[in-house]
Length: 440
Image (cartoon, rainbow, N blue to C red; front, side, top):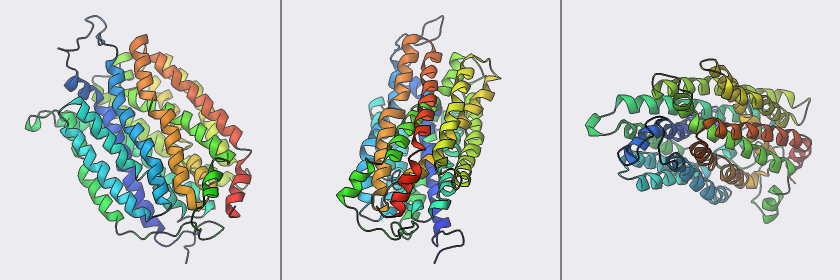
């Protein structure tokens, strides 16, 4: 029996659980960005790595890129392991995989706080990537099996609202805990920022083990899906909507990774605004949560509402938002603070507007039997060419150019690329969605 909105019984509980997990997922990711300056001071002291007395910049220009490699370590591991777990999720109980992944990344986050050397810190971020790989490609497929196509965009938007909220909490929690707990038990404050995510993560992981597994494809028009065939996997790469959506998400993820990791340092150190970095983290965190929350929910809702009139609506609303975001990033670079915060808010809003629609496209144009693998392949591509490399690339550009505007200029062109790719994809979406609905 289905609910009035076409959802499968228990769908709301599952959505809430997955939303909470995703919240801590992104909180953990952005805690690193909030405390990266403190980590730098711990492992690259000014005694061994001095600063220029005039510019206050490190004389060793590779340090920023090295710190950026911590995010790259997580992303590379995440994207490499995700296809394995995506394939496993096509064949075994998905809630089991999600629970194992959540517990693993929570424990690995705690280990990050214990790291005595930079190498061990680097390795713990790799372990976080393994844990999230067991969760990332699986969770959206569970939601897709609980809600019908006409409701899927808005429901996935609720799931992905954890991205801005969790990311903002990561900046706020990371910055405030690092400041407030500094010196407690003789430890640096940034270590405590990683400890606080462990207990809730473990509890959420245990909750997954008692959840009922939904049948694959039960919310799709074609009914319960059969086991995957090799032809089903080949079909993923022959679907234009999937490919163009993934390429656009790659450009968007490159931009998001660069902005998220370097924005606090950009505002505080390069633009010289704020009394301390904690203040900048707090403001940027609030911008991400407010702009991201509104954009993510609105994007999913608008995509669903316009679908009956424009079958390519998910692509159109996503592409339009990114094209509008392109000049906004440029305005951020040359507008004085505090006015520049307004354009940062608007740029983040445009960046997050596509979250629900683009992930709905992935769910709607892939066969239920291989949907987890399709999400996993998407994760591999968008992170391999996106935020796995953008913090490091921007860090090296910043270091060698001695100008952080140069790195952020690269980000702005990724807005433009994503917008063009998504507008291109709109012409294929109706046909590709219909093919899946027909069970082909």
